[in-house]
Image 1 (spheres, rainbow, N blue to C red):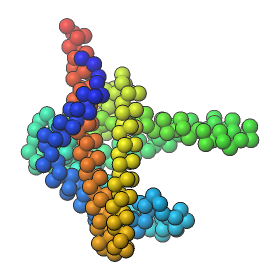
Image 2 (cartoon, helix red, strand yellow; image 1 turned 90 degrees about the vertical axis):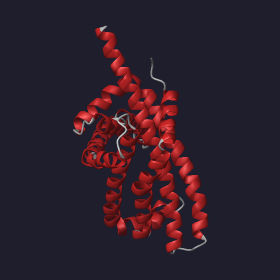
Image 3 (spheres, rainbow, N blue to C red; image 1 turned 90 degrees about the horizontal axis):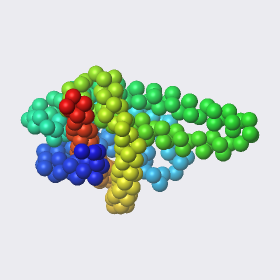
Image 4 (cartoon, rainbow, N blue to C red; image 1 turned 60 degrees about the vertical axis):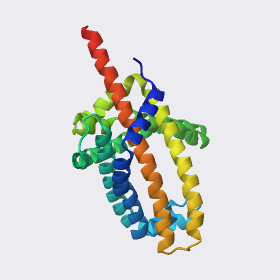
Length: 276
């Protein structure tokens, strides 16, 4: 048996479709409702999330509402972590009850937050290591274009790092390893042999989600604009963004679970082959 991304995708979609009703309920509570609440409680978020907004107005609004926005967005992120974990537990091999799945999702929130912080630290250190020699060369040559070119390897590094850590949540939820360091190391070990394939898979999937989200939310945004800037417009925009978050969240959860399932199976096969 070898690692097959087509099988991962098919298995992930099957896991989602087989548990669709329960997943919609969980995603609605943990992804849709918080997103709608964000739009209604922080109306400025609609302007900040608009890709066609004037950059100058965007910068002014960002400076003005940065504190409240970060606080609200941080709380939303924690709620979403719990939702992802609950959905993953629900479609996992243990087949828990909804209450058990919700408990598993809530349980991984602190560890997931720590992994996110460690990811940010690793990103900053890696970006500095990559950009420092490029900046020195650019300074010696008196050229600024080299620095812009240096952004490409930084983006590749971030995509690679995200791919290597992409199984951290499945490891915590499905294997019960709540220690964030242990979960990260296990994810690194599982993805090592197929790291570039996994990186490109997540990049393609992320780009596809972004494009679809922009097109869908842009179209709905035109409808919301007909209602001005009132509560109805914010509600429509929030529901649209929440719906895309629900759809992408369920698919990502299914695919990540299927990827862990396949790579864990490969690891067990390797161990058996070694002793047999």
